[in-house]
Length: 316
Image 1 (cartoon, helix red, strand yellow):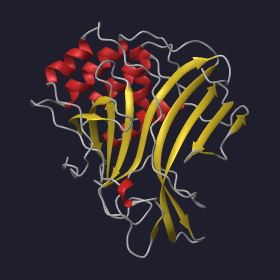
Image 2 (cartoon, one colour):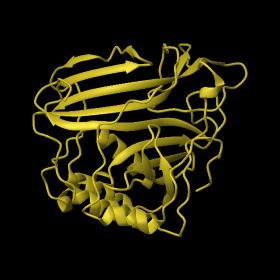
Image 3 (tube, helix red, strand yellow):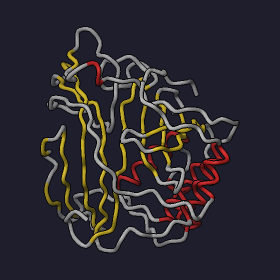
């Protein structure tokens, strides 16, 4: 995988050595990462009439002739970067150790009929003519809390650039998507289900699917371990090194390029628990991003802040 542009001034976590990182994944005494995190500020943007549904987004400067409605160019950054490991490693080492660690985690997500998931995301939104011509684009920060019941009912509480979203409100049965995995099953059976679901897909598809599952349900230790086992078996993945996610948490980055080479998909894992901290999608080719920007640019970035099983649609 080609190196990303090294243009960020953000200080990254020091590389402690692969053995130290993998040792933390193997050490049952290593404390789990706290799930509840403070919300970070993002990029302010104007509301779009027609919004491209890509989650995340830190992008390069707009092309002349199109209006970039971000507040200032200082808020526009290149893709997040990672520091390489200080010794050679294989992605399977990182992912297999993370899977083993994940399977040993206590199931401390609570009980109840609703899955509660809290994320923050940065995404590129556009204003377009009826025939799809982009008039302007902007970066939007979306803070989202979602409650899912097994029947697809629940509630969404969302802000976009700090303002209430039109998505807010209660939802009836069947109106919300759910991942639908029975996480009471053992890891081996869940792994077989995942294999069947993803037959014929490339590693990049698996990276996206992993993020989708984490968005749609609270992930149990058994499902978590099964997902990471699947990722470890994929061809075309790479262990990228250490990084900090966009709310400052240190993680291990693994990635895969799409089979056509147009996008890069990155997951950031907690080195103590293997938990998914963040997911990033980077456009590598012209015309991939929904706005006229020069690649490589981040077109999707999500951080997972909290998740739990709860009795009702109030905040835990």
